[in-house]
Amino acid sequence: MVTILITLDQLTKGLVERLLPGGESLLVIPDFFQIKMSLNTGAAWGFLAGTSWGIHILSLLSLLMSLLIIYWLQETTDKKARIVLSIILAGSLGNLIDRVRIGAVTDFFMFNFGSWYFPSFNVADMCITIGAGLLILFIITDKKFLNNLFRLEPEPGPVGADDDETA
Image (cartoon, rainbow, N blue to C red; front, side, top):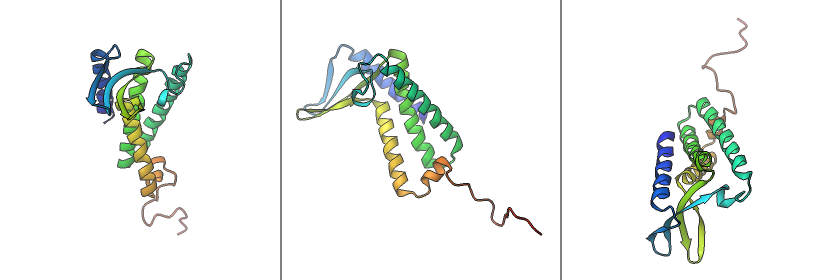
């Protein structure tokens, strides 16, 4: 799943970079949705953009979080946890690839509501948002989810097993 989502992210970014490189836009739904390439050297909504060191900090944080998520993926067998972690990992790695490749993240989905424009985003951003949303949903609705994800409590032993054998 991670490979498929990263591939989708990189393919869509590559298409936009090749087809709309000079700031042109493709109007999909007038006064609501367009596709227009922009380069973001910061994080979400341009946080840390314009700083010479921001891209390096964000790349390092993305790499560290990706390694941590890979560790959690290896440690859990819970299907929901694996799906959530895989989606978030794909988004993190998709944007990390951009930061390493071109020193910025390629964003291109642009929505506006009247005169208000939602910050542009990409497939990797959608993965991170959907994964985080699912993480919150599962934490709220499944009492065992956090334990399954992070192994907060030891797994019970076989039925009838007793640590204190005094026979």
